[in-house]
Length: 425
Image (tube, rainbow, N blue to C red; front, side, top):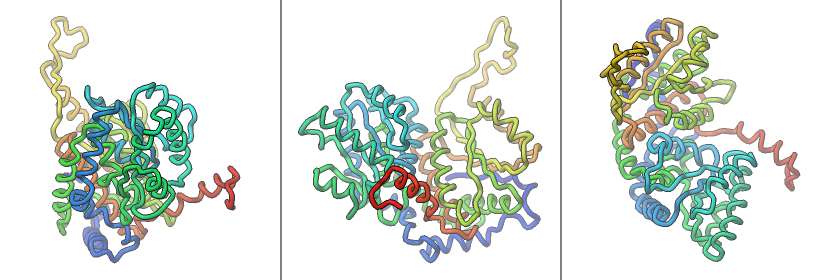
């Protein structure tokens, strides 16, 4: 289970401290389905439901792709790709010898980026997983049109066998195309928004193709959600939600998420969407940002230490390292590092993290430490469940609907009008 250390923020809280009574009310509203956006709270039971419905078929499709292809092209944007990419880069930053490479396209409109992906694909065999609730979002729709033509040129009449669609169960352009073309299809659940969909086929199919044991992920997620249903201030999700709301009310309106594992980078991107899209509305919300330590200590570290005092810092740490790398002894000690000879690099990194925390707290930055078991399937499940639940509780505590995103449509209307889409205004 995720553990939270609030000692680095204690001196910054109001005298009353984090409002766990408000967290309790928010948790009850969420669990009872009586709050704003209650129609999109299916993610709470998603791990158990997916295990009973689509998990076997997801794993079977992944096995097929792994047996015949050197790559999987995942087409999606926002919640349709960030969870999968975050999980894959966290757990499989270097593909195994028999693992297909997973490429993510359709999350932008850069011609150069798409050309680079095509160059990396070369002439290898590959499959496509297109992910969209509707099939009409411009970025993935354009990429999918391009890849459909490429698949036809490459595989001819067998092209449709290389397309897997993850979309609405009943309606939409992509669902209609999938039914008409005979593509194997998986479901984006009606009661789960994109940013909460990592435990559906949206996240699980790409993860399984990459070699992640998604059965372990789902079993761990079931256990973690059960553990996080604890209704007391001992619940780390309550602690995180209440602590960040308390600090926000004191003027700390930017939250930096950091980690000492470079492979965490896209998990941080997933977290930024989760919290930014859930809380940033009605002129409210903590601005989510991220850093990569220790690298960013030599760039952003200056601002964090001595810049504007509006920052709170949440640091993800793994309690167990998967690798060992002791520092060797040197006969001449020319670099002066023999004082750490024999110490493992993971131990040195932990000392650096403690030193950074002490420095930032003394510099006026509240510090929350989020720790989970290890950088593995269980640790991934722990973090996802924790962040999702805490996000919903925090959103309700701030008085917003954590499950809608009305502001996302503003740029789309302008873009469609400027592109000359029929009927656009």
